[in-house]
Amino acid sequence: MKVIVGLGNPGREYAQTKHNVGFMLVDALAEKLGIADWHEKFDALVAEGRMGTEKILLVKPQTYMNDSGRAVGPLMNWFKLMPEQLIVAHDDMDIPAGTIRIRKKGSAGGHNGIKSILAHVGDEHFSRVRIGIGRPLPGWTVINHVLAPFQEEDVPKIREAIEYLLPAVECMVTEDTDKAMNLYNPKKVKKQKQKPEQETGETQEGGAA
Image 1 (tube, rainbow, N blue to C red):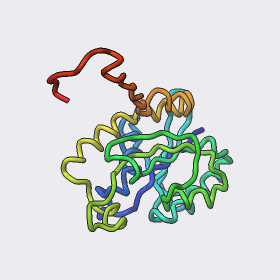
Image 2: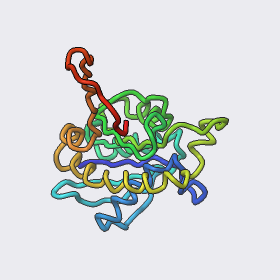
Image 3: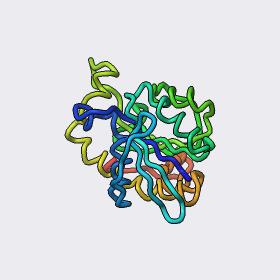
Image 4: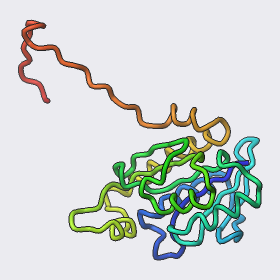
């Protein structure tokens, strides 16, 4: 069994905010898999389903972001699950809006929801799906930023990121996180060292760059 947790804040007023991209991804997974039977358990909305032959539990904590672990920890204990069976999707200010990163483990990186889960689970060895929301606008606080809706130009980027992540999360569940990282994480472009003109005997003229 795998538990897929999307982080966010409960309530209609937070539904379209940047902090709620984790909820958005879990809702998109539920829609794709035809899962609609949500019920409350341990301060969370949960729904069971399957990906291939693997049983999954979709989770949306209802504790508000900073107390997410208060919902996740008891669920993990109830189902007697190991940290490696947990996948957490959340927003990340350190990467541009619409960019994704899959990680196998790690620290909280300043994210209060992840910090709370680490405190309640007691182990960093759970997978993360990070969805970029970019940095705050000039003059904006972090709280202003994460609790505001996306800028109009970022809305399609987030929609595309969530669509891109649907098969990625399925890969994490049915295969493993390492394979998903290899297939779906953005590839780093290696910069080629340019030879000095005197070595090549050529000069570059014109060009668009």
